[in-house]
Length: 478
Image (cartoon, rainbow, N blue to C red; front, side, top):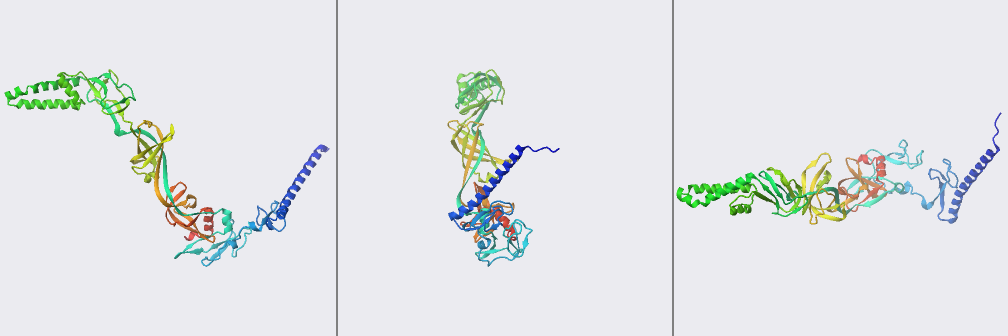
């Protein structure tokens, strides 16, 4: 037995169908009302009705699209797009020989006469025979142009710009790190062995002045050399007696030996002041004081009281931080803009509101193979010691290149082997022109060859003009 359909279910289905029918009728009536209201307001005379999805559909009365059943919309005479015939230039004096007409969306369509595409109802475009693309007079020469009617320019959103000179200033941005000024760094070591008896500078970061004592050291070798020097000095003091007895022969020998002993003390780092103290005391000093050779901050320290210090061991490193270096990496293609003496600015992360101004001091002669960068050195004054070694810094180097001819970057079509722009020749004709570009600065390219100031070029929509140029065979004949 068949199951009976519940009465309630039948009522619900019927009610849903009634509501849907009412909504559809309201939608249709609203579309007709809109058209009627437009006519009543008399904004502009309606020329015909069309479908927004199928522009080929044209009717004199409102209704539904026979393809997709959408409501047709009115097209007023003032809003009609410019036709191809109206946008074609009147001067066909230099037009090329047309081979056939085709559709840009359906290249398989080919006709001998102009008309509409049977598939999408678009206007057919002419295809010129090889070597016979349309030309335009330009001074004493003829140039090949691509024809793009005004209504197509409106559809693809063609925008123009004027070639003109602009002040060009390129800004190179990179990062770097602060380092010691290597020309103002000194290390303290010994040329003899000994034991550190007393330490006067005993921590890293301590500020020392030139000539300030660092430590006292006892060295048996140094004491023996002082004894040798004093003995030679005592013998030289008897020079008068020796000269009378040996006719001056031994006196010259003693003087030579005294000079050699004094030079030995000097070569070990003993100053003339300390040598005079030894001569005045007529006795060797058991400990010798080592002084700082320059003013600066202690950045390394290996000296400890009681430790044996061998000859050649670095005990201190002292750096003058009144000026510092900043090392930065510059990409290979940016190197031509970097010159020694250029002004550079850095900004630190912990103090971003302050810019420090310095100069490019040196460009290193080698390149890093992995990063394709070269290292440069900047010099900055550091009187307040805010620039500390190993800090990271943001670097800006501004390169002023003066006023140069420029074009927007969007106007350039780069094919890989050449750069093209489309020059507006008027009357819907555009000339593809090969140009030579310089550097890219912000949103502009510097033009070296191919354009003159005041010419009008396409800066937006040039890709579609390029496609049209291929269809019309213009680029193939360049």
